[in-house]
Image (tube, rainbow, N blue to C red):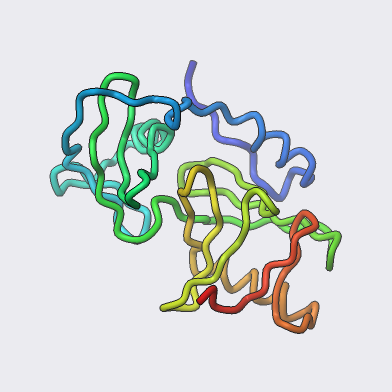
Length: 186
């Protein structure tokens, strides 16, 4: 069956986006402990581009497929995991990039949904918190199992505009009943 990306976020309600996000079926990589291991010779650049042996992976379907078997290891490293094999992969910053934001509601009733560069959807909230880095004012959202997405600059600016319009003290943003202060997590 060919891959069909989710529809544009602006055409969906937050409830519909949350249902799509929940319906995303991912392999149980956290349960797999393969005996064979090695190096994938792959790298995810800070801008979310994927490379194999120094060459960009041009097919979005391949990137999406690899992204579903990506796992964060206990030591902080990253690996592509199948039931039979675990291959290390270099990640320069975060393995995903949030490239689109949809917001509904305001204040404590606001819900924020993000589309990742892999077309996966994430709704910010207690299970998918936003955090703000210590070394740069770049926000991240938890995707799954220790994997995060860095917010693309236009998405970050949109988030800041929403927060400034609400005039919270401290500056921050609500999503799905959780408040995320826009301060360093240091």
